[in-house]
Length: 442
Image (cartoon, rainbow, N blue to C red; front, side, top):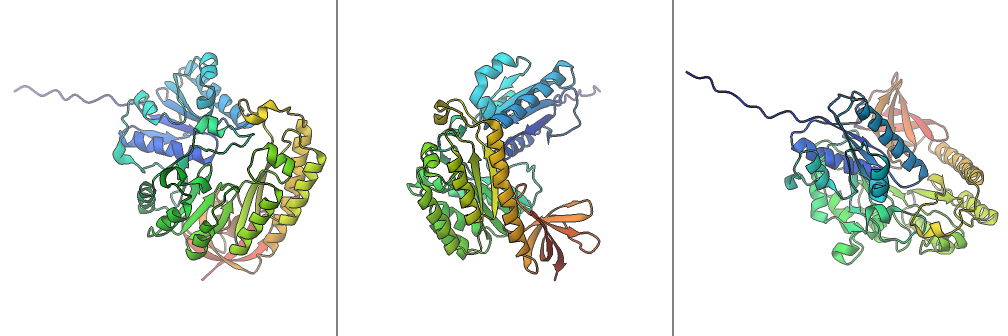
């Protein structure tokens, strides 16, 4: 009797995904990894252990100079490993690749393929995988399973003069409510308790699909998903801000009293040149209206120092406003002169050292504000989500803090016990500039 010869398909190389840049890139990498896993391809995220036949996929950022340089350095690093025979293949995707593909192809001949921000199906084909429609909403999380970034739209229609995102991400495209609810339910089934809702511009959501700003309706549907305990909003735009989302925030206990709204500047001259569609007084009125409607809201904003033509008077105006407004959270960045943006036609006339000095001054003010606000929390009790155990401490966040960028709550492990991904009640007994310390209470 003849023995049958069993033929097994050759094992596909492992894919190691490297993610650079913002939370939108994190989300895109997770979707790609979910599709690869669905194709029975071994996939890991940023593994430090590299095999010689590994395929490296680098999801790049092309937003500002520092991010672009980091992306190029990472591509060069893995290209060199490929030249040494230590990895099998290098594939580049994401914003830098979308924006500079011809230049990158000409300069980096050791890269096997370049793809843009909307090339998921082509990347999968290149990696020997098929796009599986039944996996819509399925992702391989790179964050701890208890929270997930949740992208509700792609692209941006805003004309901000300094921003290259529309060049890399295209026009605004909202995702349908039903699709988003399905994805949220899938995440919750797998242990997610917090959704960090992201987009280039949350407040534009729905205009293209439903003919109206529809973020409030989406939030109600997401809020109804059983088991979802926190929903957090990041990246709202001030012009045309839909105040009705604050009504939903007040109505629904699982929508965090938190809003990230990058305002960029306060000087009328700067706002006009930045093409923000809103002036100083309307910005001030909007912040006041939001705080009046949701009195305990934590407002986070982002500012730019050193935009072309920014005078000392413009900067002092912004400094005074930051001191008066007392944002709960604030980030500040130096202006980056980006090709093909409207502002690139202006002279980048603020010296780099002045830009950096101005950022430092703003952040010094914010550090003092944060310290004062944290002192006011001593003696209060908050619901805290435990993110990790680090050294001698359990580290968590209140509803007023987004992962990676905001304040943390530290609980000493000698007197507290918690499990990662759980909610605990914490009484604050000490506070520093950006950290709170406390004890778990029943």
